[in-house]
Length: 77
Image (tube, rainbow, N blue to C red; front, side, top):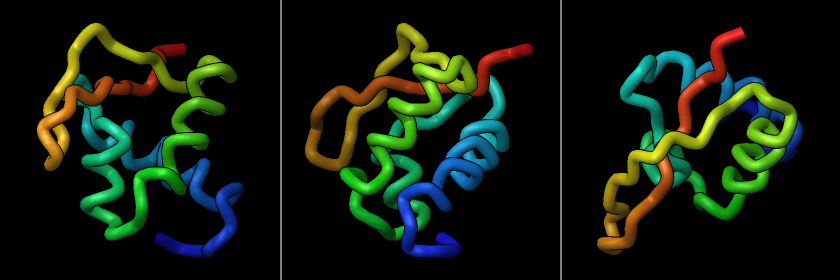
């Protein structure tokens, strides 16, 4: 991912999740693709959900560790 600042990740999170379309993305899926720790991204997903830019779906997918992870999609305006 571009910069190291967590704030920089906000635009990249929106772009990534939007590119996933209706399939959406989990925090861990994006972290794997960008090779960064999911803890660095989870806060951005939370912020964007609170701002109404992302929506948590009722779908979950398993992480590499076998834990269910919430799937997010970009909220339609």
